[in-house]
Image (tube, rainbow, N blue to C red; front, side, top):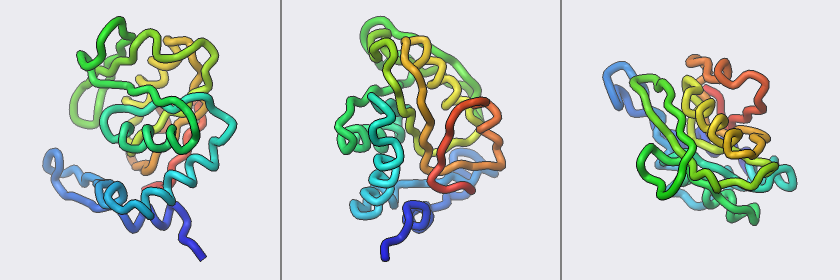
Length: 175
């Protein structure tokens, strides 16, 4: 019998206290990414859930890239990076938002999506929801549809889903 993706993920999350600032318990997913069998189990779970339902995978810098690119490849789909401000050439759509401990701005190129593309947005952690909400806005202003958001870990005590009303959100593991 194989372990579920949630069990595998739970066994590969390292907690780092007081990072990036005192009082924050950082959830480090590096142990998952460095174990091919575990990472493959989690990717297979996500790919199976969304097979045939999406046209492209988008991932938020930086850990969304680590998750999104191999997921897109596994699904036979393209991958679109959503980057920090100033990292993409050409014309971009831009959104600024609040983080748990600061502010940030993300961008996507204006030609990243074809009108009507069905997009799976992936990232590692759903915390306060600011990054996810801004990324959804970027995808939609580029003419695509966000079918769902897929997160490895949800920190439910931060109520990130509150910033994503009416959206389909799946988290492999909820903390």
